[in-house]
Image 1 (cartoon, rainbow, N blue to C red):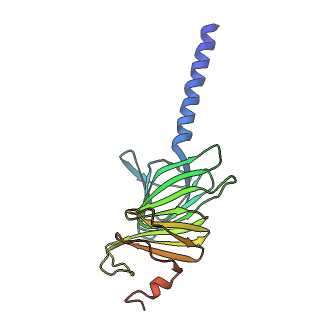
Image 2: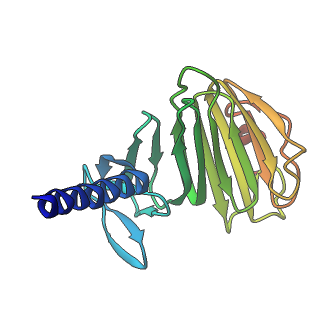
Image 3: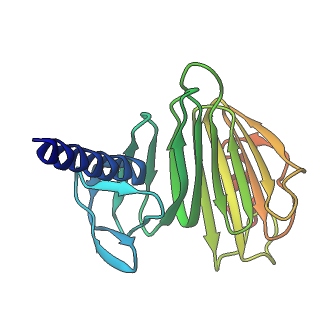
Length: 214
């Protein structure tokens, strides 16, 4: 009888540990998919599908004319447009209801809809190869463009743009995070190569003023 109880208890502990590990690694799931998107995990790549679990360190990408939506367990969403790639470096929700997330955008356009839980503002950041966007609000779009002249500096062929749709986002060049600009709702900024983020301008104004705009 004692042996049976011990075996049952051991089985329960092992199952609980497995469940906790799964819960720790799995941070959300695919909730929207148009076209073809892929997920790279642990050296393997496979096609994304609706309801598929998403884990920390996953690398997600879309092909032309595709769009991928991931909803996280805290209610936040990431929408990746066509020919884009991002990875989930960190994502955690603590007992104090504060989100701690770090997303790396490698290419394309990524819209973040951040759910602000009660008890404080989220620690939610999107990193590109040359910029950091730290959330102080709820919805913004980050784009990393390469091999194309930047509207702010035509000699620069890699740049980041951040458009804020709701709330406030702090944006800086990753080489100097302390020199950030605060971008409020309805405004955008550009980070060209190693330059600091530009002064915020109304959405669409930077593109209209760029050389070659028609």
